[in-house]
Image (cartoon, rainbow, N blue to C red; front, side, top):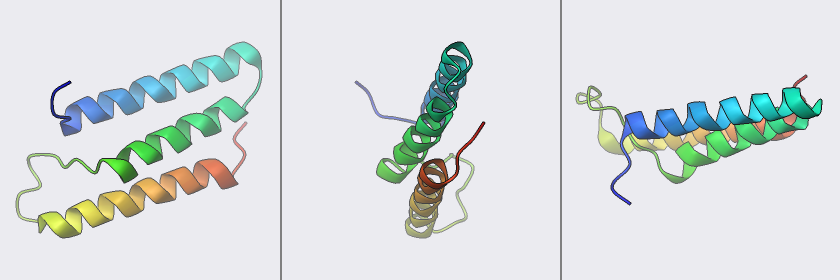
Length: 83
């Protein structure tokens, strides 16, 4: 498996969220949407890839911000009940 890019990771997030929403609609259980949020947040918390155009921002601060954002998204998925 090659190196993850920002585009690949965003495509994975869209795929995970699409599957989660589809599964929630199919089964009638909204908890699958929460699983999608947690997995999407965990992707960015574990692997904070940056877009190429973010060249002027210090990379260490950018990675820290992406990790924090991933934790926030995962926490929202855990705490809030969607549906």
